Image (cartoon, rainbow, N blue to C red; front, side, top):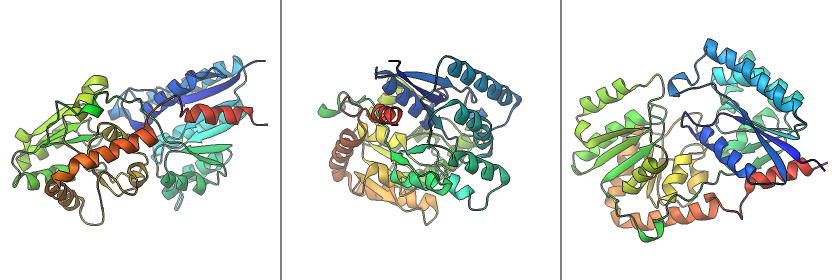
Length: 374
């Protein structure tokens, strides 16, 4: 009896982004399961962050190449399940999905849409014609996968009836977590992710400047790169204006061991996002992996990731963001004695909810269930 075929669509890193990393993790998990055949349908729409969400002739050519790759995959055999990653609410990814989804639907027996970037539901409240078309196409899917309960709002607004919540699970990279970290610097605040206003970068810089007046030993490390229209020149200009350039470390994009070292040397993790497309903060899971106390906005799916009683502080976004970030940092510094317990609580949640293990093959179980269903 021939194996069922499961196709995973999407772009792998680079660039380093939550959805690309997620697709790589799903693909790795499914390839370990020998009960079905797993095939990758690759996308190459964005070479780096500067080309994300931007239209170009190259992306039009990539659409044609994507369809050709899908045709070759389909010629090689039937597609029993196709997992397709929704591009999110921005116009260029929406156009991509409108162009590819009809062919994905025709080529596959079952089409399930993976929602990572949030925000489609809000676009449908006063939709342009392109969003109406997208809603019509997505409504024909056989199901949807979201990573937090908050994310249900997008497939529900599209009328997709079958929704599964599957959180991404990561390999435990914190081998020394049980015995502590020799590199830990209690006064180092760490942020990892895209650098832009939506992710709270300007607000974090201003808040750090204000707090550092009373705590001159503080250091701030930013890991990641600017997301257009934000750029390095703007970021460095703000740091110079605020007078924090000597206490700010701009590490750029770090991967593998270098990235984990950044988590190891941090004392406190901060995630001040207010991005409308925020859904599942993968970096929050990475911070929990490394026993870090966490400060994060009470925004979108952050509470679902961290839990109702997080190891740290979930702060409001009602007031100006810089003020809220400053208040959270000051409160955390006043409660330094709690950091060890906060970190331990976060580590425990990582182990119970987000740690990759053979006993939790979530996506493999989902794929097996779907392809074996009548």
